[in-house]
Image 1 (cartoon, rainbow, N blue to C red):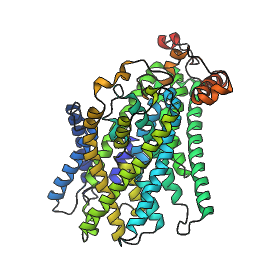
Image 2: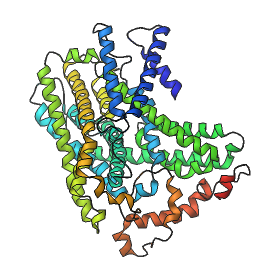
Image 3: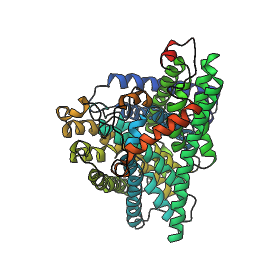
Length: 536
């Protein structure tokens, strides 16, 4: 994957030069900037206002300014932003690691609330932003934009940037918020991209009931098919490694096979016009539940840190990339004849993002609270404000979708398209810089550490206040719940559906799935691995 990124960068060219020397110099410069981002991010770890994402964005902007000055305004970036580079190389490791590291039991226990925010909430935000764009922008004479473009704007600005948010949320201090924001962020990204792709397959100039029903059917098909493909790829990798037990000869082959199978699932989804994000996320979940337990102890340590490292580098690369490309002079030249209109459109889009986010966070929180019986399970008013604010940031997914819709190969000469691209960049920079910097102080103000008693209490199996991520794999914690009283009747199923489904899934998993695909308690015997012997 790393060689693929480098090769893609070389093909993109830098500063208008096609020579190998210029390409090598540019790659060296970019790697040096990545190192600077990591070092500065470490030094600013305890800073109240700045996190690593914002640091990388600022360094990218400063580098763009320097290049703009040294080239006398001809270029402002080392490389041109490419949605192919983003979707093929940068996004997969981030989403896969999110699924691989997720605390599965808590994710699926909170699945209804997470789905409510991530899927239903994204749809509400999409319709709110789309209707606002249609009613406002259609009167502003922006350019040759049609209904399909305005609906695409709704999908583009419904995609949140959970990467930046999670860097300022603390899993131990705010476990409920971390759980909801993390789960919502992943489901939101997948829903936004699936929604965007579904819109591309329809003629939306003549909308009727049949078109809407066909669109919803296509959306559900993409969602379910992508999930199934990810689960299938994860199970296939588990079965192969369990049957062949590759690690007895080479742990390197085990690690390589896991990485390549995960990446293959993503690329297959893209090849079949499915959602690669959803596919690779569920592939990560299945791999961590089955495949990870079938490999040797050294491979477990290696894969855990390798996936986390690739994800971290991709995230840093992404924000540095976006910061540099924001000053691309070509896009701004085509929109420069109406700077007032660009500022107005950016402000309107930002307002629609604020309204679209509020349109589902507060109503859906109210509905979620109606199903909770104890105050600890309910989302308080202050927590709702933090959830609303934490999801206002827009990031590289929005930019990549905007490039996909309004440019061809990263370039556009249409006035309306240029305005939408520059407006998207403006919203992303403003929301990431301003909202991102204010998130941590806002959390400290609304949820002071003294009131966060949940963090010091043991996680309740009934509560949403359990952190979604942990340093342990999800199934490593299953023995801790052996004493939980399980529902045994239809009444209990109706009152506690997620707990009942989890209970019956465990029985099905232990009886049928783990004997075939491996997992905790079914790992291959390895005389040379004392840890694995003790874990049988």
